[in-house]
Length: 464
Image (cartoon, rainbow, N blue to C red; front, side, top):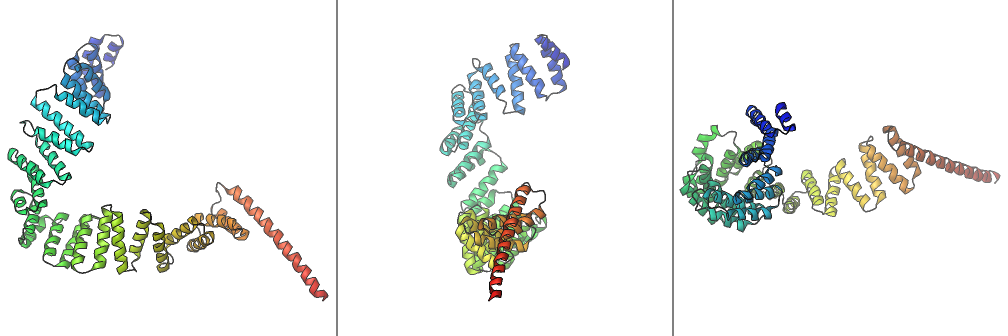
């Protein structure tokens, strides 16, 4: 490497080039060496070799914009197809997707090669899908289907887009065409799941090789699968999908307690899954347990991010059981998150009445009173928090500041002293100490004035 660098410094580029090649043979994956070789190859007009090195660099670093620019320079007059491909790649890396699509379309007009055509249309389709232009993406995928070089990925991507648009029959049609053309397990399994989604469980059962999915199809065909479930259970004790199937079987047999047991097994293996709450909700509905049904529909929607629907379900559950503290806490938090501050406070108040020592509820109530300017009530709530935790420095300091606003110098001083006792290294120590001294002096003056007044009154009474 040192020899190569020395040759390069002496402008002996041919010799440097050969030394770098030896270095690359010793360390085939070294990016720095490949970059030097590519650069020297360009200087020596070895453009084909330079292109090879730039392509190898891109295999390791697809975001290297310099490589794309150099490849564009190499092919601008030599190969228009490659020129536009690399320009499109550069624009893709720069996230200029519309410009990239235009470049790839220009590349298409400069090739008759079927492999290049399929690859480029596939790339264009992917970009259209990426920018949300689903219809144009579908058009591009469709244009590649009849080429011999088309891969299974094209059919799968196209089917996925039809599913996204909720055009299930078209997705099935595409995968059926793919099934005839390719011997692909992925295509068969994807098609099986679409058959089931399209209420064609018999067809799904015929082509799937997935044992659990086959049982699911059998369930949808109203076949008795109990013996089969018992037979395969030892092999699937750690698989949550097995217990989901077993729960479905018992649910369909109206054995709801057994179904719930299976749901709990599923939950042990796959915590906080939306499916757990959905299964529980359906089971409780059939058990006529409306409270637990609403509660689980709420949790189901919460996991799926549907907060407004979740709030409605939880409110319905609350109407049926107004003593569930956990539910009240959930509602209070959710109502806050959805912007219903006043409604949330109602629940924090209810929680504080049921659990007078609930610190979070008291803190929320204090915060609410602060927001509406009710300092007196804010103090009352903070005093309650202080009684629960007499070392809470933030509460103590806040109380001192509030009593200062209210003009209660005695309590202000008392809490400031407690604060400094607990936080002797406070950044505002001197400021607070000065306030304490000032208020103590004022208090002393007031006491002396009161004592003087009392003496005068007593002398008057003594004279009488």
